[in-house]
Length: 194
Image 1 (cartoon, one colour):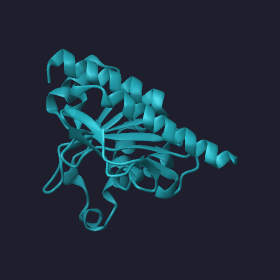
Image 2 (cartoon, helix red, strand yellow):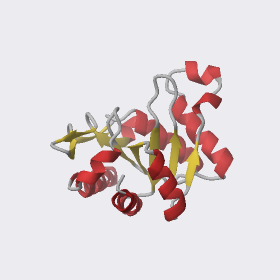
Image 3 (cartoon, rainbow, N blue to C red):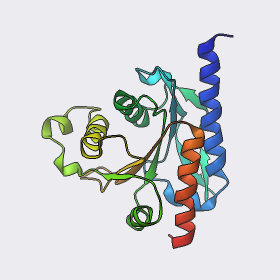
């Protein structure tokens, strides 16, 4: 077995760990956006979406619980893959991202009751040439965050724009890092009764 296939297996295993962690918690369904959710993980040397795994068809809600629509595969994620690829340009240790529903009360609670670093991005500030160019918004979001924060924060969020759903994006190094951050977020949802 080659080193690459071992690394690929490890990424699939880590995505499954995060999915198993969230799929048993009904409260987590509150964090699934209208566009649905994905958990993406990348190989350390990822330069394109074929080196990034995600859940085919994303995660939806069935009987009140988060439910994967398909299998974990490489090359099936687009939105979250672009987030990771751009994040890696600034910090190669970022290998995981999960997109979450924007909830204003949750943002406030994270700011006040956790150690997670947040960065808001105002979509209206996005230059027109980037708005018009296909697949360039995710790159712009990351670059703006790094300029404002000096690094990739735990969460980049925005209030949306015309035709764009408000969103939170949670970044991490690996499945343990993501699960630890999600645990903080889920505790706040339960505590605040969001």
